[in-house]
Length: 99
Image (cartoon, rainbow, N blue to C red; front, side):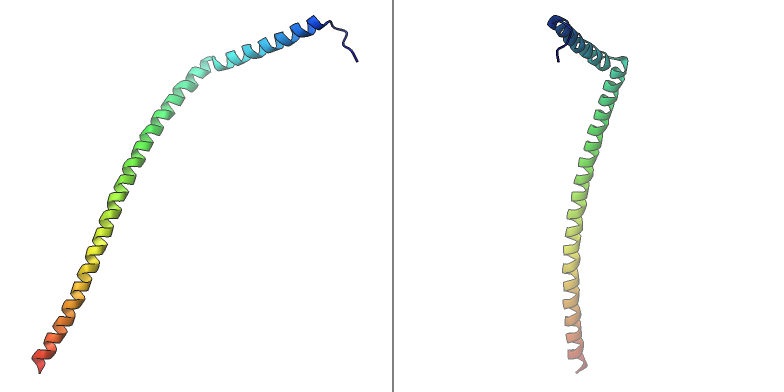
């Protein structure tokens, strides 16, 4: 089945559709609303950077707290062991003095 239009008419029509498509894309991307989108993107990017800084600070604080907690746990365990030894010595000396 052949078209009744000449080949140059179809070429002109195809080129005009492509140009209309580019014009619409340009209009959509360079509209006044796109300026709002760019400003909003910059604002969200700045907020993202601030939140990342806060996250890093919180992670560092958590690491310090975990290290402190581990040190306190070790110290507490050592003190409890020493307390048990002292109690055993006390019991031993009480038995010696009772005789």
